[in-house]
Amino acid sequence: MTRRHRGWTAVMRPVVVGVDGSLRCEEGVRWAVGEARVRGVPLRRVHVAPSLEMQLPPRVRAQLGGELNLSTNAGVLLVGRVAPTLLAIGATAELVVLGLRGVGGHAGLRLGSVAQAVVASCARPVALVPLRPQAKTLQHRPNKVTLAVDAHNVADAAVDFAFDAAQCRKAAVRALYLGTGSEGPGWERAAGGLLTEALQPWREKYPATRVRAAACRAAAPVEALARASAGSQMLVVGRHHSGALSPMVQALLCVGQCPVVVVPA
Image (cartoon, rainbow, N blue to C red; front, side, top):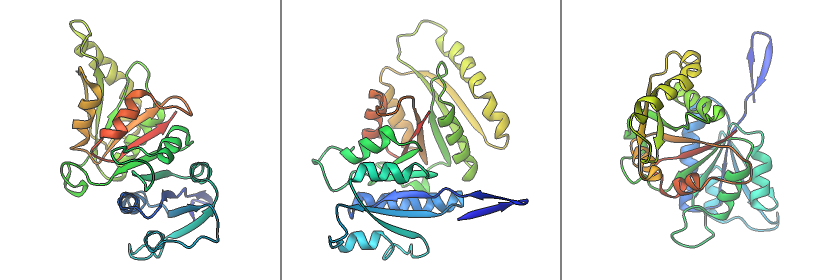
């Protein structure tokens, strides 16, 4: 799909959502539908099978465009290994969406092997959607996007994604810079000034977007971000290296209470 702008044509990247027939995946599909609508881009639902000769389960067929009323969007059946195939199609996506967790793996392990591989290596942002938000439903949460940011090592792409997502939904950005609790006196004031300075280019780029920025001490940063996610539409974090997730991001994906978007540098 393309969009014309004063004589030139811009290609619209789709939101790509992986489907496997699981209930968790169904939640991911529903969220992806809303995200594509908010962004005004196409939705592409993708199922990866080892062979075209395999019969698709009814729930997979439904998620590819039946019972969820998604008939106007493209459902795609691809053949190959799941993670590499999703990485390939996700390379040209606006956003890749996966449910937490798919049909494989063990009970209690929220981040499955496919999601782990995709979120660690995808060239585009990846959203991991929990089955059931543990607090309020997403529709009734405060209209804000939470951004985890390191003011000393700002992940520009993650900040830009958070501000753009907030602008699309007319939401506020809540930027959190978390210390470990072992910093010396006056850290909050100094860190708050550093955070304000780091975010200034995006305040100027998105002047209509409300921003709440805070530097806070937190003996357990992951738990602090998990609590913040309970009152957010989405939580955005950066990924500095391809092929690996920081321990904090890995832990956050397992305890976040809203969709967590991991944005590559």
